[in-house]
Length: 243
Image 1 (cartoon, one colour):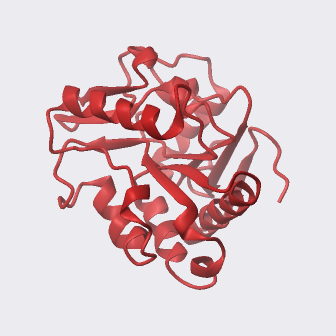
Image 2 (cartoon, one colour):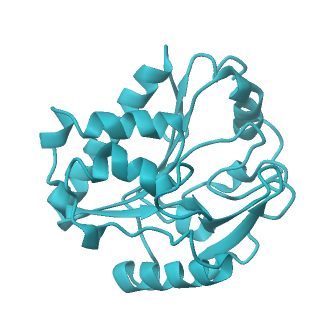
Image 3 (cartoon, one colour):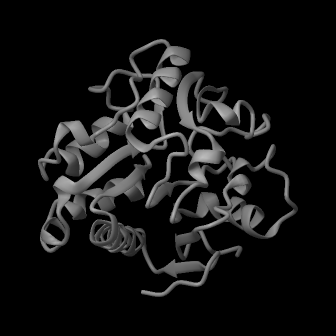
C-alpha cells in the first residue's frame, strides 16, 4: 500500500485501527527481510498495539513473514520488573513474542527492574552492539498520550534533552514513575514511524500535534519527524474528530 507522508488515515473503530497496524507491521517486515535479511522494529505499549500484537500471533499474520528474522526493540519501558502487569515487554511477550516463538536472542528488552540511569546506559550499549553507531529501524511504533507525550518523552521538558545519549531515563510526574526511553534522534532514524491513536480523549491533542503551533516542549510528539523516512498516522474516528 502506498501512503502519503504525514497523512492521517482514519478507521471506524479501534479494532480496525489495530488491524491496519498489524497489516503495516507485516508489510514493512516482509519488505525489510526481503531486502536486508532482517526486520528491525521498535515496539510501543498501549491498547491498540496490544490488539495488533494479538493479531500477529494468529493466521494469516503468523505465517506472513519469517518471525525468526525479526529484531525486536522497545521505544520505552516503565521501570518495573519484566513480569509486572505494567511492563511493555510482558504485554508484547504474552501477546505475540511468546506465541510466535521469536528467538530470545532477537528480543532486546529494557531492564526496567534496574536503576533507571543504569538501565538507560545499558540499553544504549545494546543498541550500538546490535545496530551500530547510528541505530536504524525499519519501523518505529509510537502512541500519543492525551497530554501530548510519546514514548516516554513528557511535556514540560525539551524532548531533545540528552538526545545524544540515544537512551535516557525519564520521570513521569503524572504517574510518579521512572521510565526508560529512546530519544528523538533514534526514534526518527527509521524507514517508517507509525503513530496509532485511538479514543475521543485524544482528539484535541491529535489535532494540536498535527495542526497546531510547533511547541515540542508542550507536545513532545511534535519532535517526531523522520528526515529520511515515512511518518504514518493511524486513528479511529473518535480520535480524529477534531482533525
